[in-house]
Image (cartoon, rainbow, N blue to C red; front, side):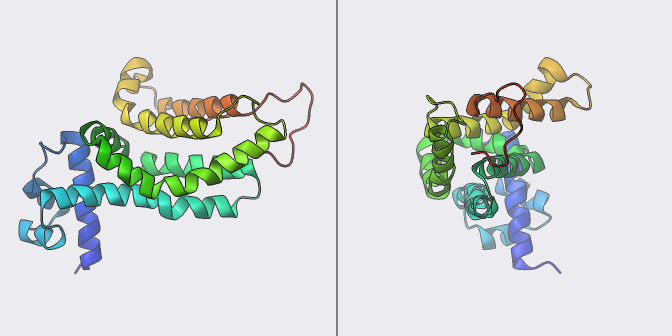
Length: 212
């Protein structure tokens, strides 16, 4: 027998998929319950209304970053470790379930104010941890001197979200049947983020042991 927490997580996962694929108007509590393998009354025990379920899905999506990113940043030994660790965490989160990115885009368009409040609550606390080390690298001459750290981190987050949210379009544009297409796109995403951040090393210079 599954525990109440297991049932709640199945509901959250099912609702994430439904809301991402069909939007709020196209998602019913009955369909979510069926996808989660429970009866509708059981769903209502955990989430008394459709708006409550929608809010819980977004809360679960964003709270994961709030809980995990600081640990990645604190465990890193250099500023570059912090940036790459946070970027990898974000990419892994959406790679595990790309519908999360599509859901975030849908909700941002449908309810910009509500999503903004959730982002402020869950993501804003760790943004300074990234920008602080980017600023340190800029002062030390490792990062482009005219780089705006806060704006840069914001654009990287949006690029990562768009990467997964627009996956079907990307496949149509350049992927075809190439089984390596997603890995190639991810590699280019990382290269673009790094190229926009770090100054080129002088030709023949050794890789530094610590970078911002």
